[in-house]
Image 1 (tube, helix red, strand yellow):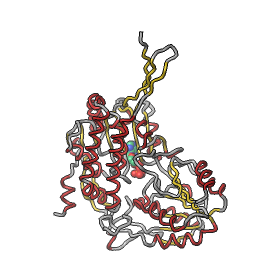
Image 2: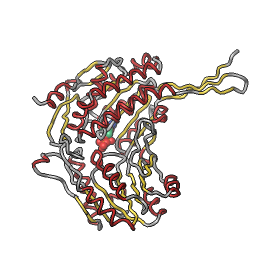
Image 3: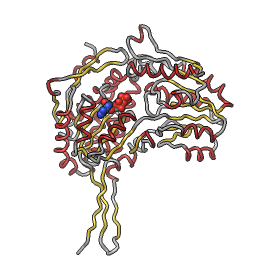
Image 4: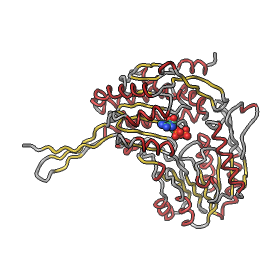
Amino acid sequence: KTKIETLIEEVPKGLFINGQWQEADGGKQTEVINPATGQVIAHVANAGEKETEQAITAAEKAFPKWSGLTADERGVWLHKMADAIRGAAKDLAVFMTIEQGKPLNQAEAEILSGAACLDWNAEEVKRLKGETIPGPTGELLLVQHEPLGVVAAITPWNFPSAMITRKMAPAIAVGNTVVLKPSPETPLSALALMALFDKIGLPAGVVNIVTGDAKAIGGVLTADNRVRKLTFTGSTAVGKMLFAQSADTVKKLSLELGGHAPFIVFEDANVDKVVADLVAAKFRNNGQVCTSPNRIFVHESIQATFTEKLVSAVEQVKIANGLDENASAGPLIREDAIEKIDKQLDDAKGKGAKILSGGERLTGAEFDDGYFYKPTVITGITKEMAIFYEETFGPVLPIITFNEDDEVIEAANDTLYGLASYFYTNDIGRIAEVGRRLQYGMVGVNSINISYPQTPFGGVKHSGFGRENGAQGLSDYIQVKFLNITYK
Ligand code: ADP
């Protein structure tokens, strides 16, 4: 038996509810597929409404005791969780690579970022200060923070570990308890995390996991009044539906939805740095990132040099099974991801765009039955093409040229999305002006680094609302209480 087979065999495949591992009703299971090979690698529990209700009950039962701990005591638990993750990072990375596809080094970096997020929240929660206000008649007016109760978290497959920790860390740091529904594509990463939290003895019911029928689980999580908050990362379509479903129970929400990031290269930018940054950002997780540069706006005067350097850099990107240590990017998540890219490229080509590199699926023995796509650069993109308005979620760099600052700012904002944006220039006046006018929750100025434990991550417009990480991340998981204390 290989090491990977042993790891898969050992990870629990059930539901973790009230500190116990259990099977789904009737022993129902679903398949987990390796996108690099198209092969089934495991079967995990396929739960529905009944098990989701059990998980909510467990979280509700755990809430009084957990929220009754001091911030310092909960902080100690978060640090223990972070330590456990760091200790198991190499194994966790393997689970992620075989079910999600990203290269091992990227998987490990993601896992360590989750540990950093737990550590940061463990400390930040100690600084969650309230207010005292002098009352008009001499009374003491007090504003304090309380946890919400049971928090439901629904997470996607593109960051199978960090999306869990960035929701769970602030939620439990302030005293909430959690029911997690991970993505059906990447349950092993989530189950492996739960197994670690179980192993360190996190009190029963503080975190619970239910894998299975998304619609059934989501239906119960949104309809149940005991769940006081839903935090979701995923597609805008599903986010809107969950938003509507949560209306009846008046839940607090955080929605981190799609993006369509502009990446603007002004004529005074350092082209070599820009190309290096752009390739690093685009091929991180093979473009399957909601903050991935999706529309590359390049000033007309530098377009020729820029595209030449970009194409040669893109041709160095090594697409391979993520277990291959030379891989710089892996497969896409599913067959339909390939179909979506082909469709966008066919539409653009039909309307006059030109492919400079890539533009097709990668096939052949080394790619098995996996979902691999050639890194692609396409120029001559206009607003008539679907790719101008639709999120791609793959290894495609669409180039759009511009001449004037006003023109490019307007084009960059011409989208319903508003998550991440990037621009490169050395002109301080332009930095202030463009930074102010871009309608995005995050702006990278001469930088692609927009996600840290200490900074607020999130969008505007149809990219959703709520912030993860940063001091703002904690305040999304509390409610405010005002008390008037009159002395006599
Ligand atoms: P993607 O297209 O990237 O997979 P989704 O928005 O479909 O994005 O998935 C994000 C998360 O939302 C996953 O955990 C998925 O199972 C879940 N999900 C999808 N449909 C529903 C639904 N109807 N109710 C609740 N959760 C859902």
